Amino acid sequence: MGIISVENSDRLFWLGRYSERVYTSARLFADSFDKMIDMDVENYAVFCTQLDIPNIYHSREDFCRRYIHDEDDPNSIYSNLMRAYDNAIVLRNEIGSEPIAYIQLCVYDMKRNRTASAPIVGLQKIIDNILAFWGIVDDMIEDENIRNIIKTGKRIERLDLYGRLQADRESINREISRLSGRITKTNLHYDENKLHKLRELAKQERIDYDEIVELADTLRRD
View 1 (tube, rainbow, N blue to C red):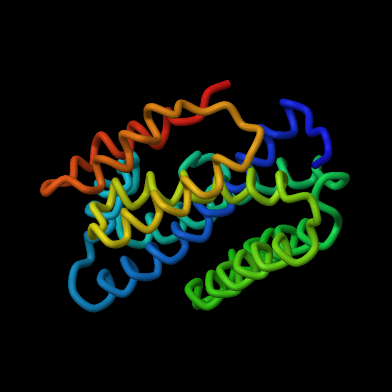
View 2: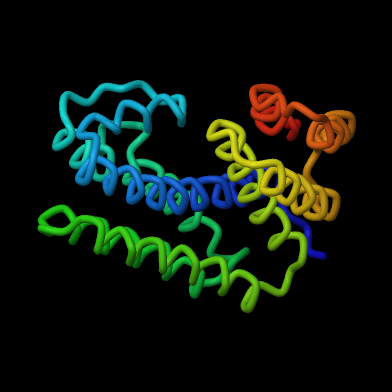
């Protein structure tokens, strides 16, 4: 296991979180878009409530345009993609050029998608490239600690989103188990008591989703 600076450990962690946020946000947007087209033109308000983001959008069309592409909206898919890219680009020595290339492809696809008549098609390319990025992380990065830090960020982000969306018990348990298997193999500082509490919460008859979100977001310590 090579020595990774605290700063780069943080970047690897957030690369995992932001890449997962782009992936899941794109998938959720596609589901919400279908509902807005078929049934409920204001379903975007439900979408914002579920993800606990401010509803700053004025209409379905405004939401579809700005949530995907708006550089000034910190919650947009584009903004989160650029955060992933900013972290990836300075980690070339840690992760190599191949994983970065797939994040770059996402950026290119996002920019091309701005003028597309069918934004969902463009988002699918971004989803595919994020999946390819995770695959190449497994295949090309030899340092186990680096892989585990990226995937710890990924699992924490997914658990946070599942908590906000009040996912089923099986999904919550699966992500807690995967997170436990990753974070304990990293050099990250984390609160073992909170990890234990997450495991216990998932066993309770009534899942406290708000507490799961809070524990996931505060599990890691600087």
